[in-house]
Amino acid sequence: MSAIEEIKQKLDIVEIAGQYTQLVKSGKNFKGVCPFHQEKHGSFFVFPDRQSWHCFGACSTGGDLFSLVMKKEGLDFGDALKMLASRAGVTLPTTGRQQEDRNKYSRLYEANDAARDYYYEQLKNAPGAEKARNYVKQRGINAKSLADFKLGYSPTGRESLKNHLIERGFTVQELLEAGLLIEVESGTIDRFHNRLMFPITNHKGQTAGFGGREMDGSQPKYLNSPETPVFDKSGLLYGFDIAREEARKRDMIVMVEGYMDAIISHQYGFTHTVAAMGTSIGERQIDTIKKVTRNLVLAMDADEAGEKAMLRIIEHENTLNNEIRVVSIPAGQDPDEVINNSPETWKQLLETADPLLDFAFSTAARDVNITSAAGKSQLAEKLMPTIAQIQNPVRQAHYLQKLASMINVDLQRLESSLKEVGSSKVYGAHKPPAREIKQGKNLFSSPREEFCLAMLIQYPRLGQKATGLKKEYFANSENAEIFSVITEGDDLETVREKLDSASLEHYERLASRHIEPSGLDNKLRECALLLKESYLRHLLKNQEAILGSADLTAEERDSLLKQGNQVSQELKELFYEKSSTLERMKRENGTDGIR
Image (cartoon, rainbow, N blue to C red; front, top):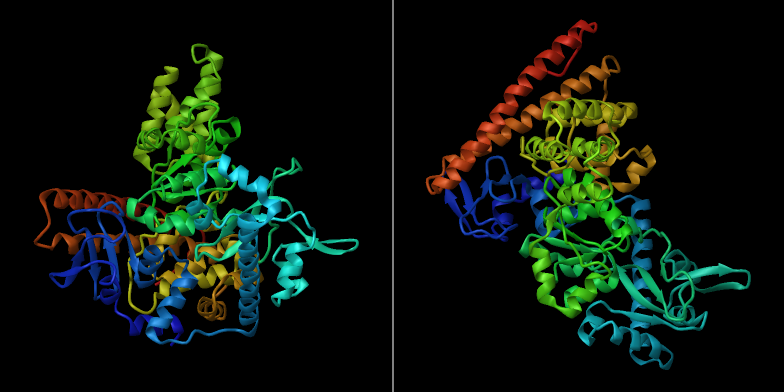
């Protein structure tokens, strides 16, 4: 028995879920107020027989024991695994290399934490930090914010930090690997000097790196730590560890562009705010947000770079499976300026934030003359690829109609054009949405999921043809985790490095499973269809179980019936798709499909 299976055997999802919300018996299942969003009536159900959970309210999501803890605690799979293993008294397997890496990473975090404390003390007390202290005061940052975000100052001396940390037992090599030193002809010197320092932490509050603002007019204006084993700017959000709990309570995250915007936001009570640390927002940052909430409000600077950044994030709406909104910041102002001048104005701007796609439409229309034929054509060319990215059919239809109305063109013509745009898309360019709606197939294993993963592991070329598979089709979180990693396009060695020890054990078992090499493409297509069918049937089964509860309101019952009808329609469409696909496969010399 693997460590993951042993954890599932020893822990009961009812007991774990009961720590997050009060559960009451509802037939053979349990019901409670959802721990992930605010509500008056309980829409959160736990199913002991399948060791799964489902929220039919605002979350519209579910999963197994691991996904429950991941979502509630804001953890990735590896950290949730460690937490549950400790609770169950299960020892996780470790390889010598993984233990070595873990020790190394721990030392790098410790070095960065020590540097943070040193910089913080320098800002508070060092005579040379007077200019930095005046700048902080000028920007309106108070003592509490200074302490909460541990702002600091790097002295002008080129070896001040180096000497301080070596005295505390760190080696030069460790400080180089942490990005705190750089190598020059004469040896090694501090990377940062005469800068206001912003520690950048991970979701656990460990210091992963730094951003430093110049205090003497030198370039660059902002200097970040280099990429290190613990610092990857594209995967971190400034202030996330502080903002996470409030964001979960409010079921919303506000994303600003800069450090100061985030700090001032928190200072005035908008503690559900994080910063992207620039205009580039990556998939990993969106995945981090998704673990806490699916409601994202963008408040980037009111300049061309900020506008472009907001438009680039449109593709992430599919990942969040929700509408992203945009704050209209007054021209010439940054968020921290607006907040310092009037917190009430900022509150109103957040409350009246527009849908991102509406912002995209108005931005695109601003630059063209839609009264001319050429302008109409330009606007359509700009917006059709964006509309084609929308995976929700209702929203896609809404924005297609909006475009048709703006340029006064027949809707059917645009629908035809949309099909052409969709067919020309390069599949695999965007990751499929991972909505984390996972329904447990059985407690310990899912042979079909494992067969599918074994094919993808042993025959990497199949990954290019796995567009019909989605992460949520994998009911077991460990399988969903492996699917997510192996479809990122990395080589096998990189995949192994990304997996935690228990997931790696599961991965190696799948990698060694015998897979008959004939008809692989057909097997994968069939497997994708069957996994989708299983996912939809379990979703429908959960809805039916919830409908059996006697204490639903009329509104809740109507909503569930509507959801059930939608799932039934999807199953009907899937049946026809499966029939036509299997018939085509037979014509292509037959298939020895999955049974």
